[in-house]
Amino acid sequence: AQKVTQAQTEISVVEKEDVTLDCVYETRDTTYYLFWYKQPPSGELVFLIRRNSFDEQNEISGRYSWNFQKSTSSFNFTITASQVVDSAVYFCALNAGGTSYGKLTFGQGTILTVHP
Amino acid sequence: DAMVIQNPRYQVTQFGKPVTLSCSQTLNHNVMYWYQQKSSQAPKLLFHYYDKDFNNEADTPDNFQSRRPNTSFCFLDIRSPGLGDAAMYLCATSRFKGTQETQYFGPGTRLLVL
Image 1 (cartoon, rainbow over the protein chains, first blue to last red):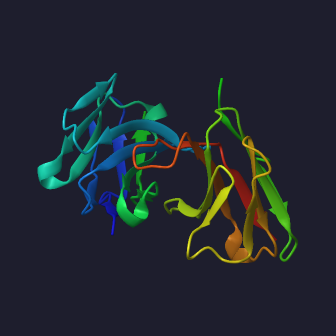
Image 2 (cartoon, chains in turn cyan, brown; image 1 turned 90 degrees about the horizontal axis):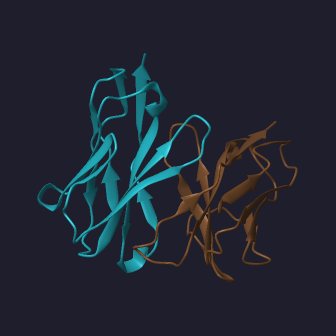
């Protein structure tokens, strides 16, 4: 069975602070993909990143960075110098093989509020 | 821009009155998905089409049906909406079915049942 845990239900920061959103996953499959999506108040799920299980390189895209560690089954997301526009719900998701082939398993989401 | 489009963005229906939500895509993707998302919860997969092949999730109520008349369009039919069906309904697409595929989501339709 696949499982994704986002332990932080809500995070509140002040603009320009750095913030890290945690994601821990469980799967018995050796081949899997991890994703992060952003859901602003408008409701659309916006794709941010995809990472496969064989690539543990960290990735940086502007103010966003992701840290993938297989040893701890974690795929954490850091926003540097947060902005009010970063306020949204962020979902971590797992897509693994086996009977769940092609099916996304989502975490419960982390509500990020960035105050001016 | 290639995209996933959902209409309407907001839908109000009455208890027990059938309602249809629509989704279209210009990405020419083979797979289309329907998710239900209730307040403060993660999206829950209802079913998906891989081309014309329909795949229902085991726990999707019979009240929910779907149609995919062609590659571009997919519909979600709720035959007799109950108050518990009030939710955001998200359509998504992916090129193919597989663990490596990224799903791209539409803006969603927020359904209110009176």
